[in-house]
Image: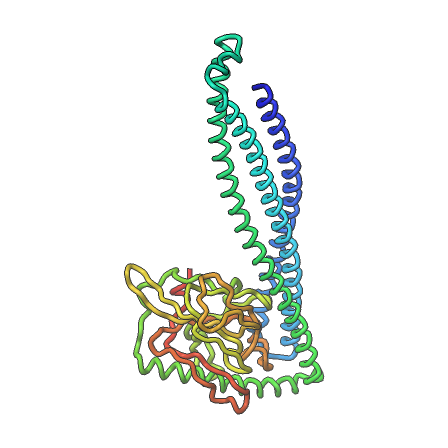
Length: 424
């Protein structure tokens, strides 16, 4: 009996010593994580402030000076985004190390409990091999006999306790492994964001240099280039507008379904720079915007707004650039309503046609492909996500009318709704 008690006592001391050592390492990691989180919060505030300056610059009259200032703001914002991504990767790596230490600790706890369990079972087997007479004769007094009987009962209780503790530790271990898998996936996503942001930074610097070379620093040449680019932009914008106007005339007024209201998540974090509806596109001969524009630093992750199936993806040098369309079946109070969501102007697309996605899955990364700053549009355009919601009725995809000018491109079209009616 003394031998068993000593074994348990030594085991507990060993457990405490290991626990203190691991806790100290984990505490150090958590301190580093907290410091990085504070830095990330500061950087995010700087990114938001720069986005505000970009939005104000975009509202100013198109001029060479304003355009260069806008490029400088976007370049600075991308540089800050790169810094944030690098810190976030360090942050994720620290979290991964922390979880790995916790997994190791859980595994060691399980092994120790197994050792205790094996010792307990060995002692129980010794008692099972002894007859009642042998146990009685082995003790000098009746009191010692009762102690031995009590001790045998305690061994049985200890066995059940150890088994339950091992069960709990295994469940915690599986939870930590799942947490580790999530953080590893987040690390890969952030690394990809970093690569895209670094590429975007080179693009922005190249565009700025190209603009200065093309205009030779002269406002007159800039305005000439701007006029030509604006005419090309108007062709594509008018094409999309005419297609969707025809759809509305055919379908009539379709009010938003009653099942709207928080059924979809925002597809990207950022600043809402253009709302849905009549937002003042009068310079192009019309004033209806068929979705939301959300702006953020280049390379920001774009997520599926809801569960669905990827209906189609496309690419091209005009219209929506790199885009994806997801079909959703929204249900509420027994009613089902089918819509399509469009994610446009992406730098890269991460989904394929026919793929099943869940809300929050990665669709792609923010860019400025297609009818944005690919051409010289002046300061009213920049890196952003264009997000549109179409009704199932009337939805389609057709080849662009100006492929002889811009090369192959397709246009998703249909009856549109205000995305704000659906978003949480």
